[in-house]
Structures are given as structure tokens and as C-alpha cells.
Image 1 (cartoon, rainbow, N blue to C red):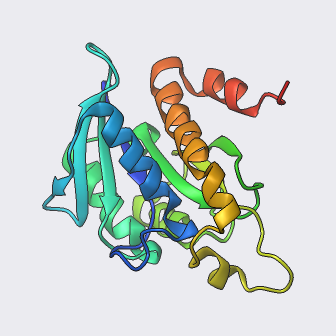
Image 2 (image 1 turned 30 degrees about the vertical axis):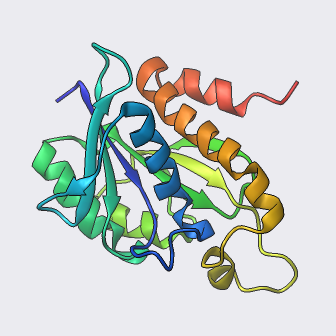
Length: 194
């Protein structure tokens, strides 16, 4: 189905995790759903799913918020790819990224998991890694704080001031990939700031 993209926003289920840095992928998904005027509903796969188009005649976006924990993201994403008959090259995974400064969005096609358990499980479950990633920078933990603890904490009060802009930029990146293609989207989001 060439006119359909699956956009998976990674995170952990439940209100206790909703505002964690690790859940920024699902925050971006909520922004996209709002833009599309779409509502999430339970799916037969372990996902909450919403559908819509950026504009009339554009490709359909299927937004998926896995209801599994982060390290089991593949158990949610792979069956939905199969259900929709979509190849992994039509999958966009939106996730938090420690190795990118906070308030930065980067786009990558394929590659390894870089220690991200959600990506690791999706790569394993799909026997593939050539899917597009929208990497939402959350920065490194301060001092000697453990990375696992850092990602499971809410954004700081200072970060929360910029968070809506970061989420909007990441949603813009997803739309740019679908509308303009991967290379054009990368050129836009990787260009140095003026």
C-alpha cells in the first residue's frame, strides 16, 4: 500500500509515564493526531491507532501508540505492519534520543539501535532496520545520573518551556518525510540554524 505510512510513537503505557522523556515519541503522536483531527482507538494489535491525511489527496497516516512497554515495542509494531500490509520502508518511528541535544530533531533512515531498547525490539521483530527514525533530542543526563533513570523522569521545568516547540518540530519532520521525501526532510531539519 504505497499511499499509507505507519507512524509509531514510542513510549511506555499508563499515566505514570506519560510526561517522561522516554515518552516524547507518544507526545509527538498526540500532536500529529490533533493536526489530523483523528482520535485514537484500541486495535486488535497491542496499539492505540488513529488515521488521517495531512491534506486531501495526501498519503494516509496510521498513527500507532504501542500499549506495550518500550522494550517490547516490536511486539506491537511488527503485527501492525503485517495487518496493514506495509513494508518496513513505510514505517516512521518517533523516539527519544540521548545522543542529540535537547530541543533538536534529526531524521535517520536505517542503522542500528544505539542502545535504545524500543528500536532494538522493532529491529528484531521486523528482521529489518531500514525504517525511518525521527529522533527527538532529549540530551544526556547531568553529572553521573544513570541514563535509564534520566529517560524515566519528566522533563525539567526549563525544558517544559521549549517542549511544545520541540514536539511541533518533530511532528513537522514526520509530515515533511511523507510530503517531501526523506532527503528533502533531512536537508530541512539538519540545516544549521541561521
